[in-house]
Image (tube, rainbow, N blue to C red; front, side, top):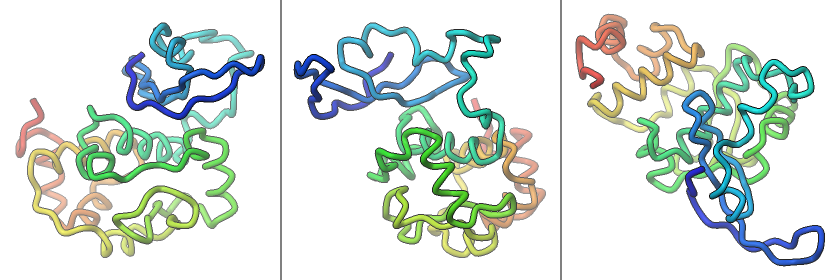
Length: 198
């Protein structure tokens, strides 16, 4: 797996110190960021996502295809994956996700206890702050779009729109409202008629 950043040393079960790091799973269908001892992470071919496919024992939380899971996965990707089209606006400018939310279950539990509903989007109260419990809230798409940073549409933003569309979380109308452009403009971007995705 690809090392993203080194973490502090930790003691294993026998009390020996080990260097740890965050690694990006190379499986294109996964893109998960995981923590591993450096030696193990460099050796592993994946985060474990390929193990036991179709095996009922590999079932973890049953939410892999839920909207909330897709939102969480999008946050991880924006903050930690330099290959993400949206990385430069998030991880690239120093926005991180707190350690406890690197796993889905704590993020899910916080969300369900803090007003998550299917029609709401996650919002950072401070647009320059991190994804963490004291800086996040669930608000309507309209309120969220009013808070967005002012940006002009360019290839990078067009690719971000394509990424958001691919999650299935947004309609074209919602994307148009979020980026303050017409539905027709969104359609042209998604169909590669403007800012062609090469």
